[in-house]
Image (cartoon, rainbow, N blue to C red; front, side):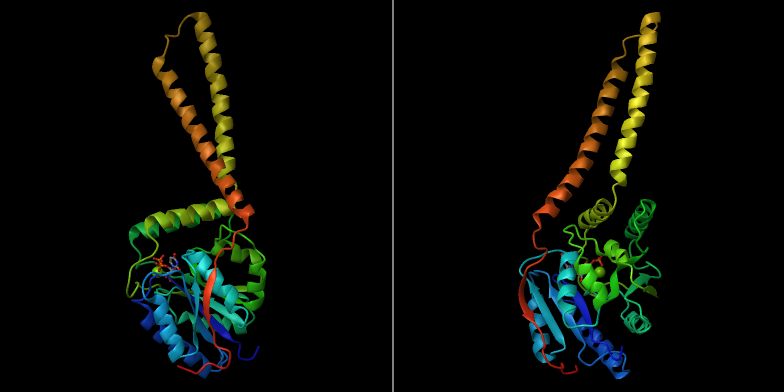
Length: 323
Ligand code: UDP
Ligand code: MG
């Protein structure tokens, strides 16, 4: 395809500190790709304001008026990173041939965008950005992320290690993505299910250059837990298996107790009794909790609530002026 239209989707939540720099760097990148005739001069950046409480939207409007290639989407309220991203992708695919998603803080090296585009020209529908190293993350984030990827793989979920949401998708792949009507959205798990030709591009991850992470530990854990339970029933199987083992053990224990009673060798054991009551109680609660987790997911899926609500759109109809 000659000169595809590229749209770069950037979800933003309270990112006023990083936006000016982000706009500069992304427009420089787009200009150089247009110059090298790798993308069309109709290419744009789409900022999705995910219900920010700071000046993010005002900034997006200013940038749009100064440079029409910078477009914006304002969500009516905070919908979360994954939903904001989806809102951007679905809007972008209306006008673009390929769409790249990237975080506003540009921790992901934007130089990789050039390679993404080259892979797209080679015929890939999905290009995954994968981090070479995580030296800029804390050891804790590194360790938990590593554990998470291992766990996911061991449960048979195909995801790329160290791939966040930095990726290119063709319009065709996005059309297919639209058909996955999931409320518990975990994009990096869903995208590999699409199955079109794909490639991987390696890059270095930098520090956030301003502002702070919008993924505190609590959000990170719930994201990981969502990822696991949206894609696999292994935790439920594990609980069932534990149940079976415990049941078998308790039959053995019962036989031992009865035989002991008949021979008169047992002392009435309060400790073991109370321990087993607690133990079984605990396991049951765990099992109930897990089952509840899945039922909760079904509950949210069947309601079919919209994942995001768009309040305003700033789009450019004609060839946008180059920045
Ligand atoms: N983000 C969002 N909605 C949210 C939280 C985050 O759109 O509710 C955006 C945020 O502005 C950033 C991206 O998601 O562009 C990733 O967030 P962040 O950089 O804070 O995460 P980290 O890199 O620390 O994992
Ligand atoms: Mg970040």
